[in-house]
Image (tube, rainbow, N blue to C red; front, side, top):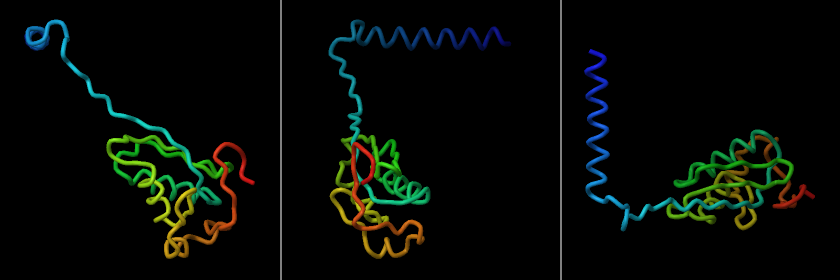
Length: 134
């Protein structure tokens, strides 16, 4: 029985491969569309591990965002996303909606006021994309 199943799998694989080759034996004219992944970094104010979870969750909630990693010491987030589905401002707006200031968007005050005390950062805190927080 195992030999029969194996034989069927091999025949099916060869058939599919042959069919694909018959349609386009040289691969000419085939355009493979890759998703355009863009990587950005921008400043985000915050204080602690709870901030990290909230900030990253907010960024990841945006359709097309693949990764988000907020650095507590540098006060910056690194994000990779499909730029055919979203853009930097949509991501910054999502983070701001969770209560956190970004480089370009002030955090929503109502959301900020609902953050735990340890997450209520100094609004004058500097954000630095390349170095340590000042």
